[in-house]
Image (cartoon, rainbow, N blue to C red; front, side):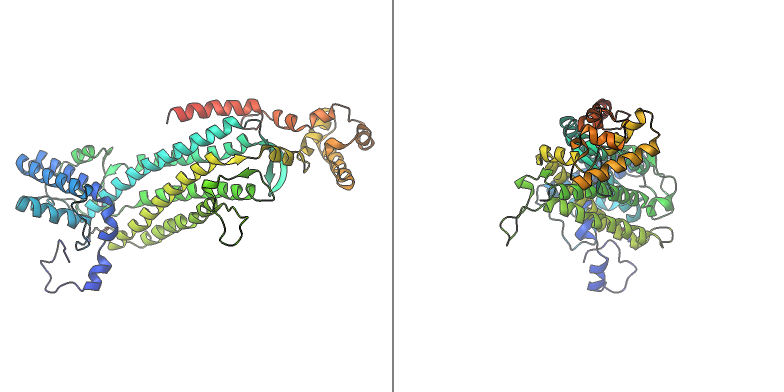
Length: 459
Ligand code: ARG
């Protein structure tokens, strides 16, 4: 047991209590952020005349030594310390002696941990942004390659109207663009430095909080010391944005699982991204997509957990907040892993274009276009809808598609039909005529592709 406090205690901490309370097993993850924060803190203490320049230099050398030794493996972060803050401080004192005891001047572990968590989350937001960029680049490639890859568009999982694969993927592109911008928003809102808030009420030392903030690349210091040590809104916001990312990945995974099924056969997942069965030799399972879908629950769980933890906490710091870490770390690892694997899976997935196109042709996906044909020949839309309904019924009874019907069969239902009906309801026409902004027609797609190209260039 190695702890930073104990002066006012007359008994040793019970071992079970110590274990229950300690956080080193997980907060060691931010040793880098802890050391970086301490370096900024002593730099500011010296600039404010609280430490001498010589003391500052000794402390910074010591901290850099600890960082180097942890990274090269000569210094192990030992579980005999209560938390990462105690570990760093105790090691510093071992290394440089009494001057190390000055590091914690004007600081509490409450503002220290608030800083470490913020620095960690801030770094990870940047990592997630990078992964989202790779994913979006992959989606952009898929879109460019598939402007004329026809497939059915669905509502209620029933064939509705033909679209293209580019258009379908483009829907996800928009979702991930929003996810990316959410990351930026969160970063901007959280980018204020809590260090200097002390335990809850600031300190009596003349700390230059603006300097600490700028040394750590924050936009400025936080403005209320009680809020500074007890705010975890940014964690909640990030987990909420992560939940949305996972929801998007999960929906896409669900579609890929359906498309990869024997019944659909729209896509084939690469062997490297599929797994087999221990009993059924023929199986090639979409486990990665299923795991991404499954892990979504875990990230939602982290969000619910932190929201629940925070809801009853009176100001200011309370130990409940230590519970923010494990679930946040897990959610970060999960989201990063899922985005990366998903990107690999879709970049290696093969499209079965003839099957997709054939599927787009049947199921009366061109029925709306047949009605539009009548409208363009002066029939009111509601009547046109009824006439095409009769056509569909006739086709079902005679096991035909709309394109298989003879012109006489058409005319028997409505004299308005002429020979140009076939061209008007061909798959190509159905898609290419839809050219309003955001629609699947090639012209409309090209506009969006150009916008996305520019968007990706500027990230
Ligand atoms: N391990 C603690 C946490 O994660 C650090 C802050 C401890 N502060 C305190 N007063 N016990 O929240």
